[in-house]
Image (cartoon, rainbow, N blue to C red):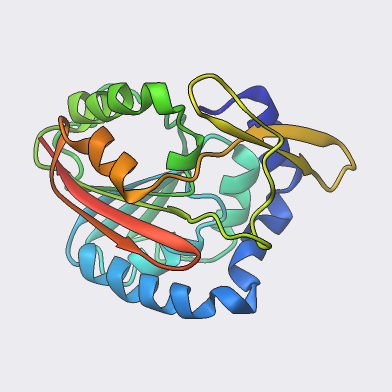
Length: 217
């Protein structure tokens, strides 16, 4: 979940949020992901959660009917707006992905989140999926993009709690150290969590990322 530590880290590091996408060894994965994401969202009305600086919003806007890109942090939204995306297609707003407002049902045909699922506690994942279903409605397309743990590339774990959630210590641009929960989930764990709340679950696993798509039951 979005804890104070996590929110503070991303607020301080907003200007460098996209650095992970600039790592050359990830380019092949990103090329494949861009093709898959574009295909999934063709013609959809998309709600994007935790959009960051709109790296993926830019791509989705090329194929979707509309995109409402949201983030908890005004710092991220301010940077996202500097991309100059088509205002007839893209709108931006501050929204807490873990405290969604009422009135969303029927407005969107798809939901997208990159880098969000890793911050959902393992014990809260099924509950969160049910919340998405309640807020957004049945049969909405849900697409999640997140990282795969890679030895020598991913940050090592500082600790693991009793529920199996893993934590990393990250140093921000201000020199402060932040403890951030980040879970790297296997395909079997993902399928187990999604079994009761989603159908047509599909997982594309790459070296550095995975892409999960499904329909909310």
